[in-house]
Amino acid sequence: MFNPKMLAGLLVFAAMAAPVQAAPATTFLNNSIISKIPKQDRASFRTAVGQALNDSADGQTTTWTSTSNKRRAPVEVALTPKQTTQTQKADRCRLLDARFAQSGGKEDWSFWFCRQADGSWKASSH
Image (cartoon, rainbow, N blue to C red):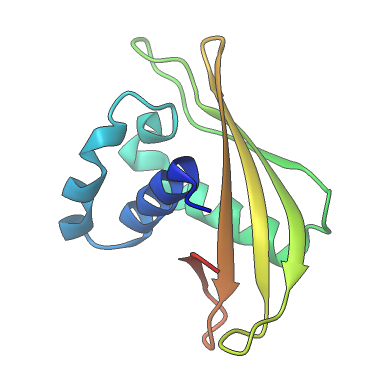
């Protein structure tokens, strides 16, 4: 079944992890909380996602918070791996639930990630 939120989330994560040329594909998410993670915090956010995928048990929540400034409240993220599986193409895939919150607004997203041969994680349609 097509899940537009999952697709949108995968595109955002891919844009954050990929070179700049992937960014135009995510312009329809400009008003989402996930898109408000400051550029200077994106590497830290990717690290937090990687740590949650590598180190957290299914059901265990870890949190990450962006830096704040005078114009923008911080983005708070709760990362919870929900399911771990193996596929023929990847030795380990995990379903990651993410709750993004900023200034009273909340968004819930779910993403599949599969571990690559080099140990990195890649967003996947699983």
